[in-house]
Length: 279
DNA sequence: TAAGGCCTGCTC
DNA sequence: GAGCAGGCCTTA
Image 1 (cartoon, rainbow, N blue to C red):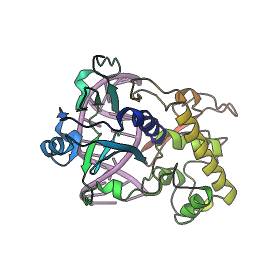
Image 2 (image 1 turned 120 degrees about the vertical axis):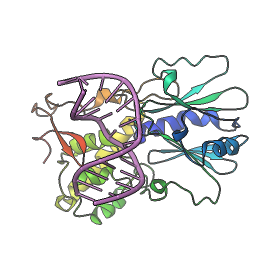
Image 3 (image 1 turned 45 degrees about the vertical axis):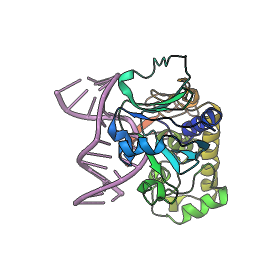
Image 4 (image 1 turned 180 degrees about the horizontal axis):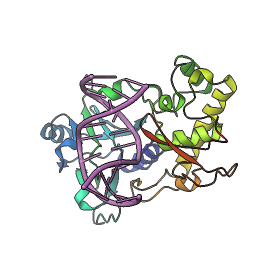
């Protein structure tokens, strides 16, 4: 499932591939993958626009256009694969059945959006568009780009009653954290996922911030985490899954103390932690 | 704060 | 064949 590091890797890979390119007419195979406007209008309006740059906020991917912005969100199983002309799109990782949208460029290259579970999709925003998706306009600061240690402490202090894991996952609080990197950050900082923010000492809060930065940095450097579905724009896998200390390791010994890693449900999410190392 | 809905492939 | 995976929105 793409979180901040995966979306950042995709952004970096796409930048040299798509900047300066002009969209040809899109093909929409699954209408609900186009959130707004209606698919016909989406295709009509995107055609002919050029890409001036790539951006990211939280888990949203931004194609900056000469007029407006194309927003994408991969949700759980979305993949954006880049195809060159003459080189057949061979994706053992993404059956054609799952192809939802094709975004061709003039010249023959194309972006292919595959999404097994049909959660992800696109928004096309015009310049002074007020039709931003609600989640995007209310997004908190990007945890990677916009939050330093002092700001993180300030943000935490405003939410003393929240439990730390659900708060980190709240995209209105900070944008970009998902289930995997949150569990890993809490393990590295030795903090139990259910701790109320008010119970964290300043030292623990700083430790948490540094752990968040460390796992995101390593996640990006590893090209993301491929537990099952995530692929980069070339169809390749990331390798951070090999570095995971708790996520997905229920019953296996903690690397630090050898206690079995536990799995509980917190705010509806499967949550992995070491009951001995995290208090 | 929690639960339901959106979704489908995989596991039990 | 039910339940799980979970990002994000909506509703209670």
